[in-house]
Image (tube, rainbow, N blue to C red; front, top):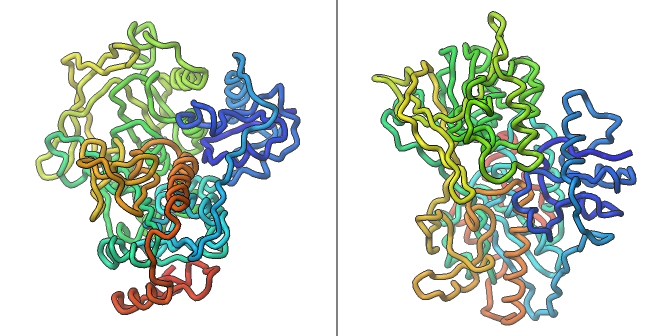
Amino acid sequence: MPHIVTQSCCNDASCVYACPVNCIHPTPDEPDFGRAEMLYIDPAACVDCGACAAACPVDAIVPHTKLTAGQQVFVGLNADFYSGPRPRPPMAPVPSIPRLRPARTPLRVAIAGSGPAAMYAADELLRHPGIRVNVFERLSRPHGLARFGVAPDHTATRQVTEVFDTIARQDGFAYHLGVEVGRDISHAELLEHHHAVIYAVGAATDRTLGIPGEDLPGSASATELVAWYNGHPEYAGREFDLSHERAIVIGNGNVALDVARVLTTDPNRLAATAIAPHALQALRRSRIREVVVIGRRGMAQAAYTMPELAGLARHPDARLHTLPAEVAISGHPNELIGPLPAPHEWAKIELARAHAGAMRADGERRIILRYLRTPIELLGPDRVRGIILARNEIVHTDGEAHAVPTGDHETLEAGLVLRSVGYRGTPVRDLPFDAVTATVPHRGGRVVDPASGDAVPGTYVAGWIKRGPSGFLGTNKSCSRETVDTLLADAERDPARFPVRDDAALRALLTARIAGYRPPETAKPLWRRALRLTPATI
């Protein structure tokens, strides 16, 4: 009897390598791995050994006999993925680990950032004896979006931080928390104390809408709200107006659905999650009863994943609702013209259509998914009072779906408008930056000067600052592996590029420069030991 993948998984491929019969795909060596929204288990090949479930860090895999009613949709998704032939070897190819020649001086690497890309890079480096890794994080707590960007009620997904804690307990790993690279220590100083520096600093800002009224009070980014309710220290003092009955989220990715779900969840249910106390208190006073999620394209092009949509359909505290005119295929003849949707895309379409015209009882919360709408203005004048939307139609050109305005407009009243239209990287001090892609130019993770094409000595990138804000949590694993492989290949060619100063000199520098800095006490630090603040503040 098969096991089933039942949620947006972290895609770190732990289950792939645990499977004794190679029945979980796509694997990291297959071309569709990077763009897959989840992994799939072949029901015909699965031997029901449970190895994948034991290996999964986020509890995304369960036996089919333990599926809930709301999870039954994943049985078909897993089976449909294998509806066509998929050649595969008996075992998934395991990436080879390059072996370094013994060096006179052990390799020392600094990593700026402590999110998934940083931690996976550290893990890849620490597979090699003698390598030491210093991770620098400007906040007092590590793990970036894995800690502050995952919805508090997604308990299983948040468990991936336990994997990162395991990585941090390895020999040769040290956290330096409360240390901002570029402010407390420069790039040049990092290279004085390390043979190489990997920047895994993510994408620090949000994309904007660029429309009138976007700066009004009551307009904010969804990621600010997410950081607020997840207890990010820089957003604890933020206030969001929850006094209006309707809130609007612009964008229809997973973050948009997360925000809509949290805003409509019974606070008593949220109290059992990892939500920040200040946010829970504010949500208990919230008057929001309806959240409208706006997408500029159609339901066939929606960016959210099937597991996220299925989770929203099972929301115990709010009814999911779509408008018949926006999800009726016959009503939009261009809606599905183009490449035939994949099975998971068809499943999203059918689920959206299944909730068309759902009625709301008096006082019931609801989430409305709107399609084919583009925001063109937020209405004020003193604060957000509403939004003007342009109606679109889908036109397919060269296999791509484009939203084209029809000239029709509609207005919705709202007291809170949150944009969720993507992240954007920001320039990294002392590194080249491509303003168009908002990434650091590189070749295989090795930073290059775009003017000369030459490599910047000892400098590498991983994660979103390398490839842009794309992929899933586990996508960072293969991204970081590529960067580390490049770094190690460079180290093999030039093992003694230049001498570096030792850990004692690094600790002395930071202690002298940062008030209250507490260096790691051992080679196997717990992250609390490196805090600038006291453990009582955690």
